[in-house]
Image (cartoon, rainbow, N blue to C red; front, side, top):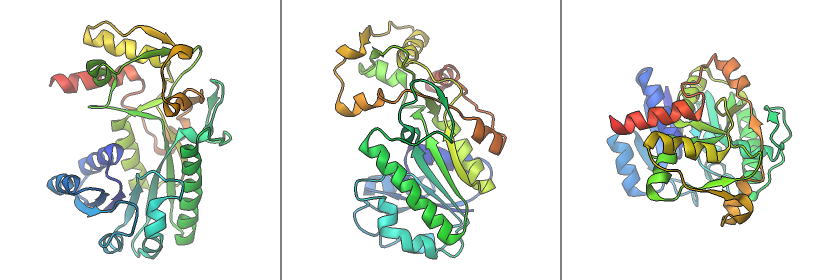
Length: 289
């Protein structure tokens, strides 16, 4: 496997770790700055500078060698920067056999707390989620033109080492905002990596939700993390009284319980962290190791 990654962020790096555990592979990835490029190089990933505002001078040649492509760059109002600047390179890539695209469950909009699956209507409640939905369509067009499988992986809220409720509690940013009957969906980054790696090897095609088994009220997640740390949780704040940015407030407009049954069935996958409880325990063990 020769994997090219647009956007070597948190989830994509977890995918690299999962793929490497299964054997050797060649990996190239884009980043926006020189320091991160040096970090990638030091971890055995060939870096390519790509800011998303113009084509990269080196990406085209790397894509010509790639067998698998993973896209982890957010689109904007003008479209997906990867496709804006490198669509022709992707279509021309002679060895490319699979594309994976990280999208978001935010494309579903509000289900008033009901369980939904991939057949649910897509009704984005914010501009950034509308851009995601448009990008999904654009990637389907590219995959169809090449005649190769495309897996659109709609991610729930991502957490994991160095990005968890523990960090928020320690730095004082954790808040227990209570909106009656509100739940959020989440997924541990290691499950994202393992699922994506398995999907890449299987050349999985289709749209799949990546969320754990238990959507939960956000205040319960913070309280559980505080209990594990042996500290007092922050006080509850009514949603109406919370000082939230406009972007943060939009997260509370979408209330849904997202099913992961399709990805489990497609890959025979068993979640390592089926709920935030197992995920929290693993993060704390990692921090204390």
